[in-house]
Length: 143
Image 1: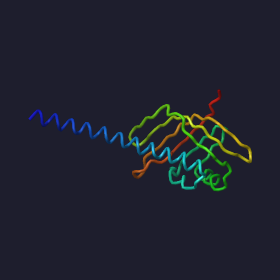
Image 2: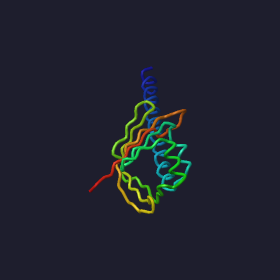
Image 3: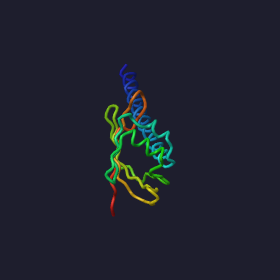
C-alpha cells in the first residue's frame, strides 16, 4: 500500500514539473513572437498586448496601446533587427511573469539610423488563458 502511495505522489510531482515547464515554454514563445513581430513592424503585435499596456522607452517616451498602434502603422520607428542576447531574470507568480532581458535593436527613426543595446523589464499577465504584455520598460546599456 505504501508503494502505491509513493508512486502516486511521484506521479503528481512529475506532472507538476511538466506543467511548470510547459508554462515557461509558452511564455518564452510569446516573448520570441513579440521580438519577431516588432522586427518586421507587423501590426499583429497588437494581439500580444494587454489593452492597458504601458511602454517606457530608453529615450523617455511613454506609450499606451493607442500611441503604440499609431507608431506601428505609421512606421515612425522602423526596426530592422530585434535580437535578445540574454535573459537575466525570469520570475512568475500566479498569472504574472516578470522577465529581465538584454535586447540589441537596430532601426531607423526619422531617417536616422540607430543601434542600441537595451536592458528590458517586461511584465506579462495571463488573461483568458493567453499571455499578454502588460508593461515594458527599457534603458540603454552604455559601455
